[in-house]
Length: 55
Picture 1 (cartoon, rainbow, N blue to C red):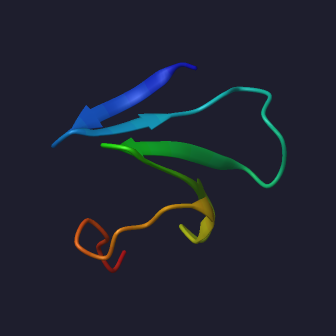
Picture 2 (tube, rainbow, N blue to C red):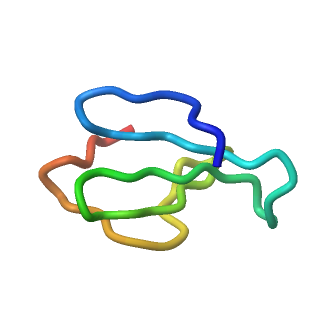
């Protein structure tokens, strides 16, 4: 999967022709999540409150 960014141990990845809704994948340690691009809502996966910010 193409890596878009990596910072503070967080890896952001995205596929060009992935399924709807438009989203990106985030990995942090053993956690994985899918985040909607338009709303930044958590679509699926883990979301540790310590790493989460109030975007």
